[in-house]
Image 1 (cartoon, rainbow, N blue to C red):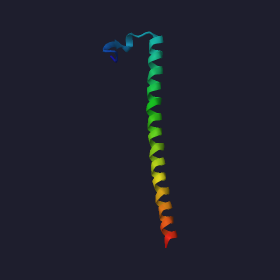
Image 2: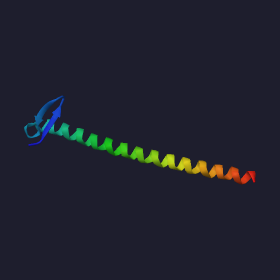
Image 3: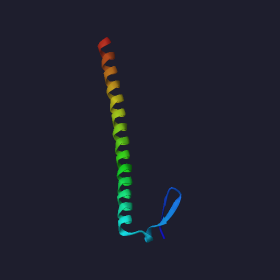
Image 4: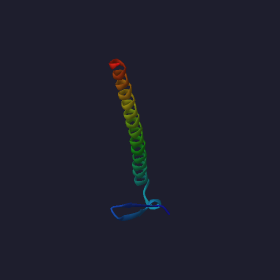
Length: 68
């Protein structure tokens, strides 16, 4: 049987009421959404950093061209 642990207390999921199972489902959906959003944010941040570095290198390259 599946168990849920909250504050060091274990609860049998099969023994939960429908309302309790619905709340558990909302919590699981929220956790999954949070993980997905965290992953998305990390991806966006990585692309932002890469593109900032790419632009910086291109701009520095243009300054070298102007000084010649």
